[in-house]
Image (cartoon, rainbow, N blue to C red; front, side, top):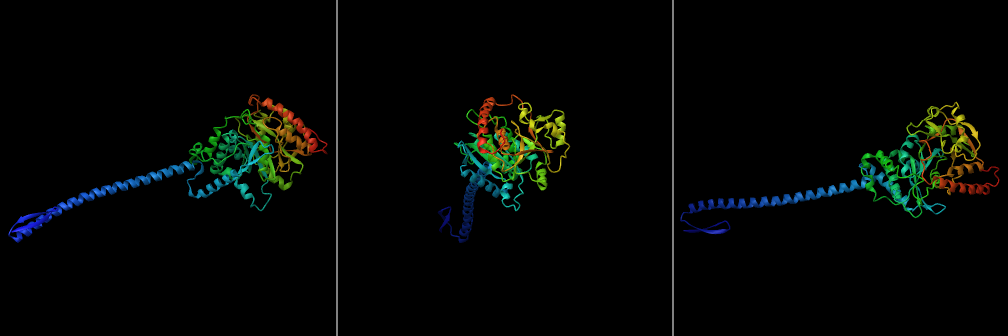
Length: 465
C-alpha cells in the first residue's frame, strides 16, 4: 500500500500495508520534522534576538551620547553662568536677566560725550533691598572706589576690612570691556559677600558697547568648582597687565568721572572715596554710625581721615594703636611722603599720632584744619558735597581740585581722632608710568583755569585757592 507523508516542506511516498507501521513512521517522521522545525525556529529566534540586542545597544549608546553631550554642554555653559544646585537656578537666571537688562540700555554718555557709562551694571542685594527698608537712614555710609581690571583683585581684601556697602566704578578699554562685564558677573555669581554688598558700574569709551559675555566662557573654566577664590585668582593674574594711568597712548583714565559715577551710584547718605588699593581702619562704619547717634556732621563739614602708606611686607593695621607702633619704627609713614609731602602735610601727623584717643567708640573730631594748597585729604562727606571735576584725567590735580572747591564753597575740614586710611605699599619715584610728568604739567594748566572758574561759580566766597 502506498501512502504519502509530508515532511520538511515536501511530500514523500511510503509503501506499507500495515497501518500501525504507517502510524509509527508518521510519529517518527513528525519527531524528525518537529526537531528540524524547532532548530530552524531556534536559529531564527537567536538571530532575531541578536538583532534586537544590537538595536537596543545602539539606542542605549545613542542615549548615552546624547546625555553626555548635554552634560558637556551644560558644563560648558555653566562654567560662568551655571550652577550645580537646582535651588540656585532661579537666582542665577535672575542675575543673568538683570545684567542683560542693564546692558540693553546701551549706557549713557558722560557730559563730554567721550565715555559711555553703565550705571548699576550689577546691583548688590543690599541696594536692591534698601528700597524696601522702612528706615531711610539705615544706609549711612558707603565706601566709593574706582579701578581697572588689573586692580580689581584688591576688592577681596578690601571686603575683609570693609564689610559694608561698596560702590565700585570700573574703567575698561577694548577687549577688557567684555572681560570686565564677565568678571563682575562672575563675582556676583560665585562670591556671596560681593553680591551682598557691592554695586558695580562700568565706564568705557563712547564708541565701545558692553555686551553679555556669551563667548567668554573659556576664560572661566573650573570656576564653578573653585568658587569665589577662583575668580579672584584669575583677577590676580591680570594685576601686572598695565598701570591704571598707562593703558595706551590714546587712552585716558577718567579718574574723576569714575569717582562721580561710583558716588552717584549709591544711595548712602555719606560716602568715603578711596582708591582701590587703600583700606580704612577697622570698625570705621560702626564708629561712624555711633557718632551719628550723638551728632551729625554739619552740612558744611567733612571728616578727614589721616592717610598713611605701609611697607608691602607688613600686615595692614586695624587700629590706631597698631598703626602708631608701625609708624614709630618707620614701617608706616604719611601718604605721599616721598612724592609730595605738601599734599598731606596739613593733616598734621605728629599731632594726630600723639593724641590720646580710644580705638573703639564713636568717632570724635580731634581738631580743625584750614585748607591750604595743595592739600588733598581723604574724608567722609555727605552726598551734597560737590562732585569731582571730570575734565581731570590721568595723573595730577584730580583730587586737589575737588578739595580746593570744598574750601572755596565754605566747607570745614575736621580731623577725626581714631580713624585712618592706609595705602598698600610705599609710593616711590620710579613706580609710575613714563608719561606721569607730562600729564602732571597738562593738569597743572587745567587747574589754573579751574580755579578761575570757581570765582564765577562762588562769586560771594571770600576764599580762594
